[in-house]
Structure formats: C-alpha cells, structure tokens
Image (cartoon, helix red, strand yellow):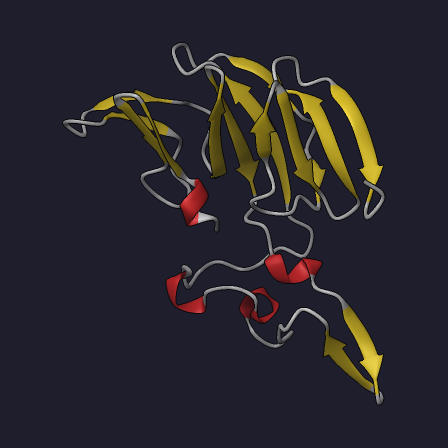
Length: 171
C-alpha cells in the first residue's frame, strides 16, 4: 500500500482515500467537509494531479517483493533485493501496518485512470494490467509515465494515447 501516494492537496481541496479500500474523496482543506466522493474509485492505490486532471492507480495492492531478483548461490535462493520470501510482501513490506485479512496476490492487476476533479468524468483509462510497479506513476509536461515488470510506458496525459514503450532497461 502506497500510503504516501494516497493523499494530495490542490488549492483548497484535499484528495484522499479515507480507508484502505474506500473511494477517492475530495475534502475541504479548511473544514474537512466532504465535497465529493468519486464513485467507482474504490481500491485506489495512488493519486496524482497535473494540469487540472486527477490520475489514479486503481486495483490490487502491488506486491513489492515481486520485483526483487532472485538468483541461485551455493544451491540456495539468494535475493539481490534484500527481501525474505518467507515474510509478507517477500519481506519487502511493512507487516505491522498491514491489515491482517489481506493476502498478497501473485499477479495483482490495476488500471490507471484520468478523471476530471470537478465532474468525476473518466477522461481515459488503461486496460487492466498486471505487473505495475507501485509508486512509479510520474506526470510532467503533458506526459504520464510508469513502469511495469515488463516495460516503461509513456502516455499522452490528456488523451491516454501510448507515445512509446521501452522494454525493461532499454530507455
């Protein structure tokens, strides 16, 4: 769970998910009054904002341990990422802050969605994808880029059109 990526403040509005699986909600920054609840955004894992558009990563929590590299050394599995496969999140997570009833999915899926903050209208959305690497969504100069376990993807932030895709390690 990317708690640090689930709350943003834009002007007089705070956008957050008031619970782990709760929908994105807009709050008045001065009073805390709920201004808008964005239906269909339950399970938002990340939220970002650029040029008047909200960008959400919605879906299964990402298992950070899945991105760790394992090799065989002296007939034993050895992690190059410093994780322990016997622990939750392959040892890469924060077990004390995690809900007891949550189980990591072997192949978590999510979508990235662009929303109008005022109307809640979906401007564009990716197809469901697996292998999204948590906290990689970046926005700048009209571009939305993120990483999956297979590639780096760059989209036009306004339309969602894929501008380029680079295989892991090629860009």
